[in-house]
Image (cartoon, rainbow, N blue to C red; front, side, top):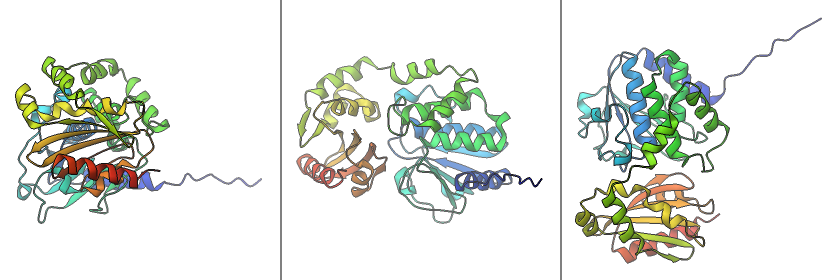
Length: 329
């Protein structure tokens, strides 16, 4: 009898992960890890998860963020190791994490330092043959978990798992968004089965609000209005100053306009400086918000995106609503 051996072919995704893993195993230069402005759970969790992993692997590595880590993520291991000033001339390699392109980091673009991008956003720039960009992944943290397990699973400490689980939990909005498919639950199961206290992580992320943040929220909710199925709240910088709150602490406010029954998109607009507004967009599977944000130089996912828009508030709102209409599905 003739028997044919079944050969398991390597998928493009696994090839990308393997290529990066093989490259970094032999790499000995200084590595800088960076992520995007207005950092969320996936950005910070992935940044610190990879930092801790590469450090355990014996690499010279430093994490960088141009903006302050939000209060709800300040429990993550080694968060105090994140640097706010990046000198690309002092780094041999930059790994861009959870961002479509370097301009989204808030740092000056490096002139000669090579960049590798690890991300799950559907659009963006290609930087090298070692990029690992997988739009089908539920989070960048999920890509890094796959990378770490392939590189050396014994190096994945509890602290690394805590960071990566935080990225997964927040980017799927507690497994409620459309990116919460089998891959996300498989990652969660792997992390839970290794005795990670995910209940504690959820509590630290979602149940630690400062009273002044809630007082600000009460004021902000009085600004809510709906137009053309878009519910919007606005936060002026004078309110942030009155309550002495960093705008990063308003990150979750966008969920309130999204919850309006008639709305298909929720929007939070925060004043950065005069005629400059940080906009967070959340959706209900009716509008491609990644495309909306890209129109204004931002980025994100189908149901969650962000951008910074210049102009008078009324002009910004009009532009947003027009663009949202264009990208309805």
